[in-house]
Length: 268
Image 1 (cartoon, helix red, strand yellow):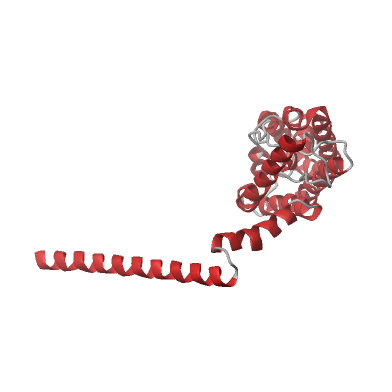
Image 2: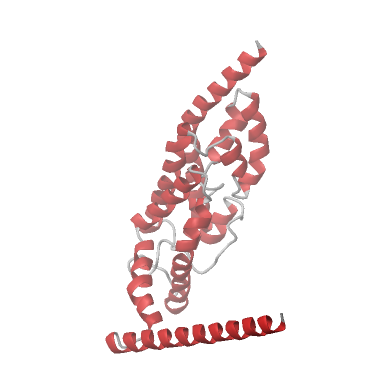
């Protein structure tokens, strides 16, 4: 037994040493190849070949629309869209925000077309997921004030407080929105419209590009807009919330009517 244990230990040490040798050799080969071919390192090549183009794409209207679209699309299929998309875009959008902060420090102003980035982490956290992924404030408002079914009247009361802090799991899973064909269109369209509104507001100069002030994503609506964009940011958020109500309302009424009919059938 002792011989077997000692033999196993020697085998593990040998495998470990061989693995370390292979790793060091491969690292050295990669370093030499990139030093000879590009004049830099592998990390520098990653930055210039991948991060710079991706960062440029993220700071564009298609990039903003794509971010909003994929968050909602993944959520509709039951996947946490914000976590998935954040894993891809957070480093890029944070870099945009820090670049704006540095530009503001050096020049004293942020001007679109003169180096200022439009799409930053604040763009996502304070506007694209306002009241939660899919910007479902419109559903919550409709449940509170226009619902006929007891099911949605109760859900509206439960959902309003979390929605103020951009938490909408009660709506996404309790309504539900996940795999609900009736709610697919508004759940996708509202965030895309929000991206267009915010991008347009910054592009025309109504809303100043965001600096390096990063807020928690759970900062309450309107307050977050005020902190990152002044009164203009609060106004843009209010406009987005109004658009959410207008777009979600007809789809909610259809869903509410179906739920009300089921409740009446049970009563009868």
